[in-house]
Image (cartoon, rainbow, N blue to C red; front, side, top):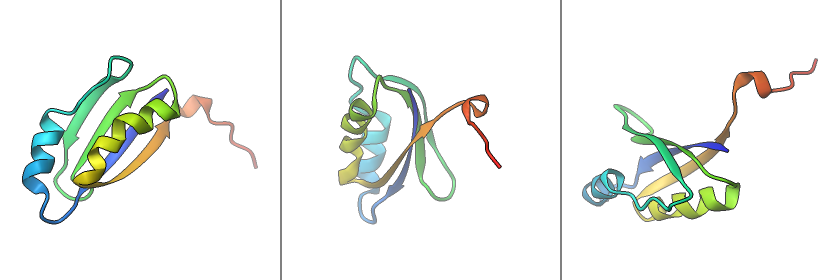
Length: 84
């Protein structure tokens, strides 16, 4: 499963957030594709694969002490079933 996590740094946590974003703890069952800093809000995004939502949550929880965290499941647009 592919996930995108958006990270908005909590005021006063920029230095620690920068350190954590540069060196996150990545479990063996997580594949981190991209970890990008952004100009604007959110401050960073990460794109990663996890076998399930529980594993994804376990990975993203580490960022909660320095950032507001929003995690989304990402799917190829072809997999969406659009209805009218």
